[in-house]
Length: 238
Image (cartoon, rainbow, N blue to C red; front, side, top):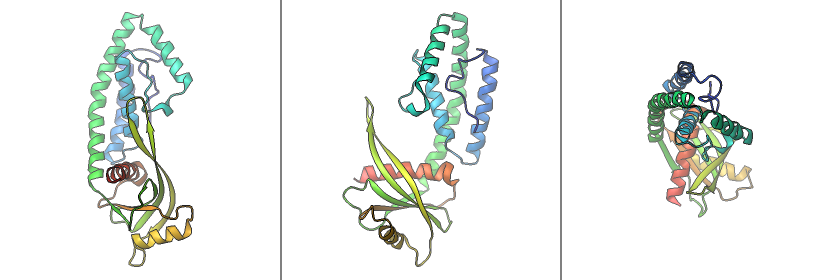
């Protein structure tokens, strides 16, 4: 996937037509992926850049607490230095404001399309616990079925709690375990028993069966949405 650099709109030549060309090329590829229902990492990347533009517009540096992994100390210092140089140049700031306004207008519809795809995928998901759920369901396994495919993808999950200065969030880490072919003999219940038998480090795991009734790109769409939906499901049920 083509991506924008973190401070793409203020680096190099600050020229509206040039930045417009860069942005439209980027959005063209984003929309091409969305047309194929491929959400990630495209939607996350797009939202990241949208928030960066908003931050700069509010006279902040381009540091997003929601995405700290995308910026190094060197990135932050480079952005601060560039900002200090151009903020004193009225003509440059005016051009940048035009670039930002145009970019926000163009990015917003793409983000809305991405969110609509996300909501649609989520609406096609069904999550069911397999057997009894332990009192602490924050680690275990989930079985993922993609539409009518017989293959079930098994993942081990661990839900973690993290917080920033404003709020607390739940995240999820997963690890691929195996695949099973669904059959009369291979049911979600029998898969759970097999996992417990073979993987002794989780003697009483929570196990969930997650299935979509429509097929989606597994890695780019179904799995990321399933992960987030599972976190919501467990958090609301716990």
